[in-house]
Each structure stands twice: as structure tokens, then as C-alpha cells.
Image (cartoon, rainbow, N blue to C red; front, side, top):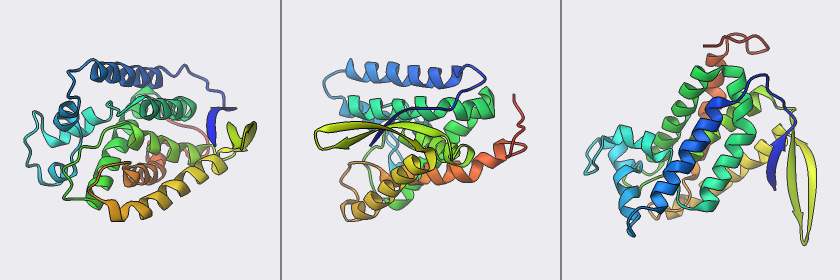
Length: 226
């Protein structure tokens, strides 16, 4: 199941969403053009759980800063493609509700919450975490709360056949977070071996749901912008 657009028009042009997407793409291209040992870049600027919790590090920047740098790094085309697709579909509407300044703060806070959620589930890990998934997960949480009935155009794969259906956001995002929880539980025996940071997704998502109300003056309608 792959969502690719929603029927949820915005009133304002999504400048910040587009800027975030552009920055992610630029950083990814810089990663690709880096020297052959790209792993060094990830270890230098990725968010490493052990360092996030202890502040002891051999990285060139403070561990707290690596959360920010890691949010714009990705491990491959599928990784960045999926994150940017979800950011484009759901980010523009959340930005429209919050306004430019609040959206930037909300997005970054979701990224930080996600990184520390992952760190707390694997505190001894020295494997770097990279990607915008945690911040984007927070956007999904906010979207679910703000627009649960918005229709999302989704590709459904039925064997060799592909069907396009319009599903409520609560179904699309609900299934997505269910998958994150299932994979997060199943991955517990593989902690410390890399792979997908499922609990970063879960942490960012929960943080987004809990905090989005604080950014909107009147949750049912009117909002403050700055």
C-alpha cells in the first residue's frame, strides 16, 4: 500500500515543506559524491544512541547537534524517496495549519523526540541513525489528528494488478503506525545490529499527536500564525 497524494487542498504555498525536501535532496547528493567510504560521514554526523545519552563522543560535532544533521541524511534512494513522498503528501497541510515558523519548530522537535525515543530503546548502540523518518512520522501523527477523514489516494497491490483507491487518512496512517509497532516489537531481539529505527518512527508519531495541539490556539478551527 503506497499513498501518493491526498484530496486536502491548502490555502498557502508550502514553502517550508519544499525547502525541507530540497535540503534533504541536496544533502543526499553530497553524500553520494562523498569519498568511497560514506560510512565515515554517517558515523561523523549521524545520531548515535550511546552518545546522545552520555554526551561522550568522538564525533566532530556535539551529539545534540547530530540529531539535526542526521535528519537530512539518508541511506539510499528508497530511503529518501519514501520519506520525501510522505513529507510532500502530508507536510503541506500541517504547514498550512501551523504557519511557516511553527511548522519548522514542530518538524525539528519531532525529529529530536524520535531520535531520543530510539536511543532509549537501545542505549548502548554505537550505530548511527540517519534519515528524516522520525520528523516525518511526527507530521503523520499531526495529520492524523487534524485531518482524519481526508481522502488519500493509495496504490494497492493485488498480485500482478495495481488498484488506486481513496482511503481516509485514519486508515492509511493507522495501518502505517500499526506496521511500525509490529516491526518494532519484532526487532527487539536484533537491537544493536542496525536496520530500521522503528522506535524512532513510533516516538516521532506519538510526539506529533501529543504536541500538535500546543501549536494550535483553537484545535477545532482558528489558529495563530507567525
